[in-house]
Length: 367
Image (cartoon, rainbow, N blue to C red; front, side, top):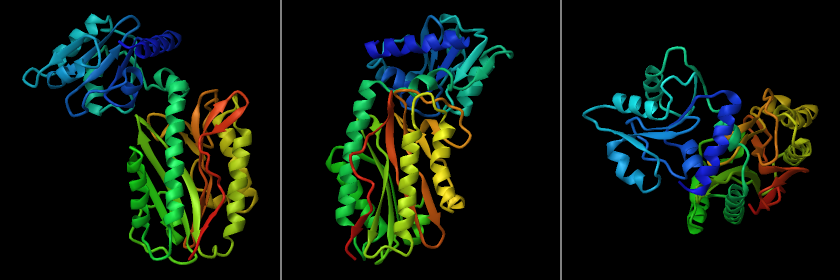
């Protein structure tokens, strides 16, 4: 195994000891990527990385074994389509001393049939929880390598946004602007992960599906984009107006900016996530637009674009150094326009470091 995998397995086992966990079961996906740096092809064939306090093993479909062996020396318990996975799973659990683990942590992204297969193989009294206090808690705190990858992707995203600013004009469609953004990501060897372009009244839908609507003079345009390179993503929202801003726009943009600044000021190690949400929400509510801020203030960012910690009005998660999350308050006026400003930050000892270098100022394009 790699040095990184050894370090992360040791950290996970420390969390398992701390929480009294006898088994962690991970399916192909981002949790497995975090531990091993790869995952086998995910399909309907049960594949599980099984981690006990002292040993680990793979339940591995025989079809995937050869390709997966190139990436790891963890012991495989292979199973064929003809035999099915149950016997191999029992053998794997016995080999690592996890036939009766007392409690099991399940990867919350695991297919339901994988989870039921595993639970059926364990004693009925086995306690079961998801990864929040073990693997999930570790993933929330980014190391130096993860920070560098996220920072690199943020820089690519800045340049993709600048391409959008240089391109947006009256007469083009939302989708044509999105195509320019996607092309820029490709030009830097990144993959466009998502693109929300919401012009005029479409901007009042926070997760608008980019459409063929033609951008008109006076439209405010929400541009929420992200790409992915070297296994990590980016995420950022900025605003553009084509021509003269709509009535009331400049005032509301300033309110959202103040909400961002309030959340940034509140973000410190030891603060609960709900306090960050409250800092942003209080600004918008005091300005009379509370009912138009219709979503949480932020989400974590790492291997996944949305992952813990979640910055919600009810979250009791205590923020700590190394956590990466978005701050993205918004005001959405039905039938008129929406405004969202989003930063991704990493929490340092003294507060948040913003990954983007691009100002949040309104970009005004000629009509």
